[in-house]
Image 1 (cartoon, helix red, strand yellow):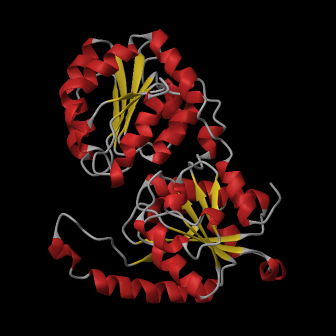
Image 2: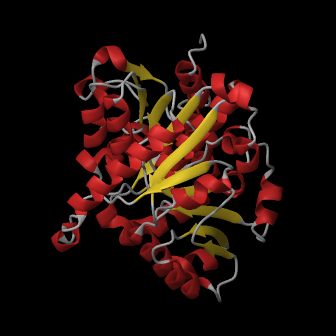
Image 3: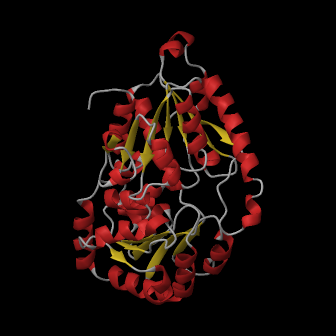
Length: 379
């Protein structure tokens, strides 16, 4: 990891010749953690590289990126609000302001290249860099590309994707299949189950279920778990429950008097959570899927039903088809989730089959492949 002080004290003689990168994007952990993984890989290969993140003010990257040791500049930008058209009145002004902010940041930092990982801030940064003739790289984690990335792809230097079939979104000659970068702490984890269980203050003799609905939370999953808390307790199954920040207080209050339940808005050390878990409940965003493949965990997916082109269902179904996961539709979650998870928790043979199957899809070096390509190091 790096710290801001060491970045600010780069020798001037080195700084003139060092490569400088802007990494733009965020909004969710699915964008932020791959971005940090790419930044860390670049720094491992070129310690003199200077890296500046650009995110959206008020979003979680403004907290998570500095925690990872990198500087970040925030833009006053927001996306289109589909639930309340009135909230979009200020959107044109915010977009115009963000482009002026980007212009100032880019002109002052003078990057060698810009890397976009998705999220509100990615588009104005890469669009401006392209207009200045600065190299731009895109990382598209999903099997269905976002509109901003599709627009940026025409003039991008290279587009890193997780899977094949992306020619329908991007110029074929610019695509490079790398997989999705997974946090090094998860890839390199050698935490024992006992150590991980103790980290959460739980019982090493009990089955453990990990619930991760994403950094912002998953309403349907959280509500189903809340309804089924007594069933888990009665079956002697303990929970590590990441509620997401949106409704954390509500679910923390519901669980506070229940024994064997660790509950919080966010899990900082996911390598501990994966090591502790016998079974995982998760949304099936691209980064969650990538991490679970690396962690080799039996998983029950509940895809977010409103993802573009229902790509979360496609992500989950591809593993279900290989006996590597179980899928429960969002509309069935209150009826089926708890019973399915309890049954899987008690079936060691089924867990082993799923572990062996999901492990085959693990990609552990996507961050290094992307960093080498950006740094023009031979693969």
